[in-house]
Image: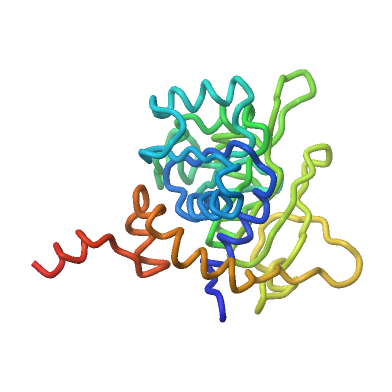
Length: 252
């Protein structure tokens, strides 16, 4: 049973979540939300997840309580993305151009700088893997991947998952390392579409494992109803899932 690129991204993210106790998912995070629900189901609920906007979140006060949970060390893993991501894991959520005269304006940072520094680990994700996204240096640092030694930081980036590959991140060297390449892609293609330099091991880079049949079945059957509570459009787009009331409304 062949998996799609979206499903490969989701299961790659889920693999990075193994062993996490408390996982938080913010806004505009369809793939991480699906991955978190998948791991929650696989763990029998031992991995607890908090999705902003979900009635099943373990907190009830939205972003404010999420920030408090992170400050107390209760968030093992968080997810972030960006319009631009550079080789030092800095992310840009502000826009393109020289601030404040931005030619293209995005939504902004909200709590990203805080959570990037305080959550125990952050997994970066970006479906588009091109040089316009993975750049040598972001135009604006919305959230820094690393800090100077005299700046307190309890967490930071550990990995980056894209539509082409999986990177790990070494904060001491401020560099990404290519860990695996997705099926149908290769190292040369990753290098050609990445604007920053990255480490690579000697010999062949592993191929990202595809999900086994039980995982794929769980992802396609049990995850979409949970995902649709907060990401209905993504659930329809990736899994063709729509709640029964949506189907009835469409017929009207």
